[in-house]
Image 1 (spheres, helix red, strand yellow):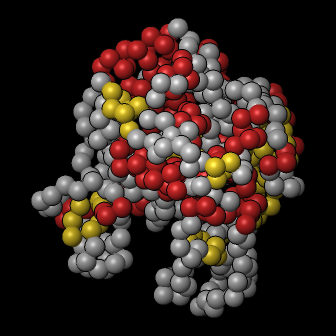
Image 2 (cartoon, rainbow, N blue to C red; image 1 turned 45 degrees about the horizontal axis):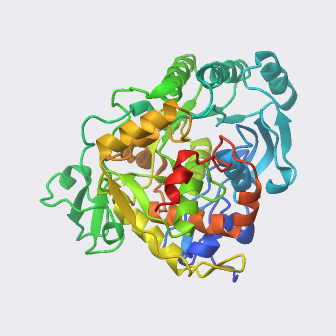
Image 3 (cartoon, one colour; image 1 turned 135 degrees about the vertical axis):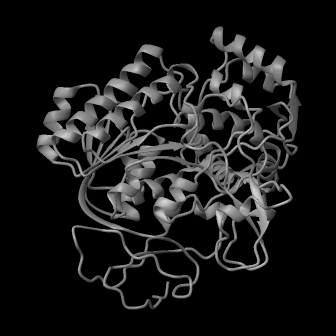
Length: 480
């Protein structure tokens, strides 16, 4: 790639070339696209690098940062942890990266020169010795027991483990602590979230939020209504939804444990620790399996895809690449107070469940082969609406009988409008998510096809990086 000239800057600028979205290639961008290095000047210990204007560089997808500090990522053997590690080594420059998990690592998937630590976050004595040894500057706490685990383990890991890490972070004067929570803390919304307003944008600058309330029409945030404020005459979506101040009503042990862990984070903020709480929507991307592996398996075989209700509800997802970028920006922004807060994060561009899945169906049908096997012998997947009340009752029964991998929060929210406001995060970071729901699903599906044989050769598990045992759902698949 030819070096692009940038305006003179006192800070170094590392850029990530992006010349249009390519569903097939983008999923492997961590390995295939290496950022060109431009002239570096006056590198301090921690710098958020200048974001170049579009007039300076055409087609730039994101900006990079340089962190000459020591970072610990917990839960690093999981789906998010893997992406955080890859981003840290291939996009951001980290002085020393340590990865901790109670589960073993598949080290071949990770960048070189990482410290792999197999340990339990509930062990306070080990946490102290770890801090003494490595003297971390930042902690990204992504370790968590997932909803399919036993309730006592969920509370012990998600609450006690978080408290241990917060205690040593305060004791050893960690600069910033980022806790990965969940929008599961909001439970199942009984009322529709505030609507997504759209207005005609006749200016190149962003329209003030107060003006957004003057619109007279409601448009679904689909491909035709993307956030395009830099282009005159298009439609701009004003992100609304559940705000961070909404009541917290966790569903099941997982949601309840996240609420308790958040309250402990808030206690340590009062003691002087800079603690960012991020509440991501369900995030998807390469290496994401779990419930999505069931969806992808059915789509690959051209099956009808049952949805609870009509599929006309809006359900916000999140691309893991956007989540990872936001996490590192929370570490590098200069003003501590801007990130010493609680933030929702989700896609800015999303449509209804029907719209987003139909885009995935179209893409899947046009993929001709998978590891040399023809896929065209299968018909195109379509949606199969089901009566919400009856379907939920059946899924509840299947869950109690332990013959279905779907848990309550998944099926209880599936037919509801479910989206959160990300305005607080956008304002704090001066940043926007880049991928739509459909982008994220398609990228993950293509990775699934490319790794199909390896995925199917492994035994089912209960984490997001393993395929789940479909149970009775596999029996229903035969008739669809």
